[in-house]
Amino acid sequence: MHSPGRLLAALLLSGAALSLLSSCADSEKHKRGISLMPDMWVTPGYKRQPGVEVHADVSSDGKEQQWPMNLPPVPGTVPKSGPSYQIAPGDFVSARKLVNPLAPTGDVLRSGQYCFNTFCVVCHGRDGDAANGYVAKYFSAIPSLNNTHVAGMPDGEIFHIITVGRSRMPNYAAQLSSDQRWAVIDYLRVLGRASLAVSALAKTVAADEAGVAAKPDDANAKLTLAQDRATLAQQSKDLASVESLGADAGSQFMPLPDPRPEYDVPSWPNVGGPAGQEQGQ
Figure 1: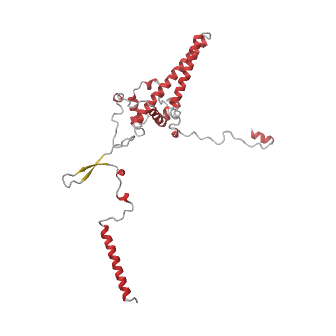
Figure 2: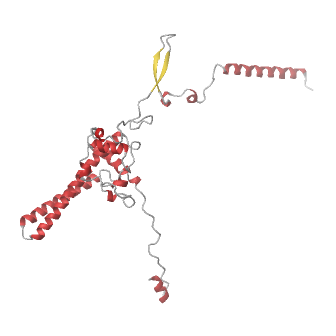
Figure 3: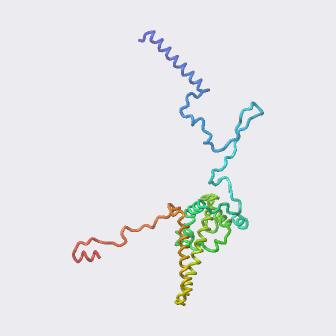
């Protein structure tokens, strides 16, 4: 049996514990106590998705109130809430009036080449020749971009095709921002001019060679051929320089080579003797 003193002490201790728990429960309704993870309770403003405007409520006690507002879009992003490009797919008249806002600076051309080599070369080829595209053996009638037809198209028309797509070509409005699309056009212009210059001069050199073959003693024909060959070599070098602005631009997106067997030709070890020599052959 417990002594009366011990029983009284146990009752007093139990009452104190209940009183403490009751006071903690009452205070917890009004105070949170120690904040072990304050960012879970008070979220910093930079984590909010919508923005706010702060106004003074002059109609009551003058306390500040926050009103929701739209934040400005992050640079380089495309809004998902609605189309930012308002020209209809078939309205090429309006599209041709668009003006490229980007000058072909070095940074713009490098950006345009990176985007071109990432999204365009799979069909149109790294040099703009569709025959050199990765899918040329699977799809036909893919237009080349290094010809006089594309050279004569306004920048706005090309921008329109990249933005909304045409025929079998999908649109790239979600993959490329507006500035990136204009940068692709700047790079395409430089690439096209260099390609056209090389192509036209190659035809001239071929005509020069035919003239020298017809008149092998014509000194002027030989001199013209030598000059045109030198110019062709320089323009070919310029074209290579354009294509190598960023030689590895988009290389991580290049398709892997076709798998090959471990051995192209079966072979056997030479174990000696006529039978072994025949097998080794």
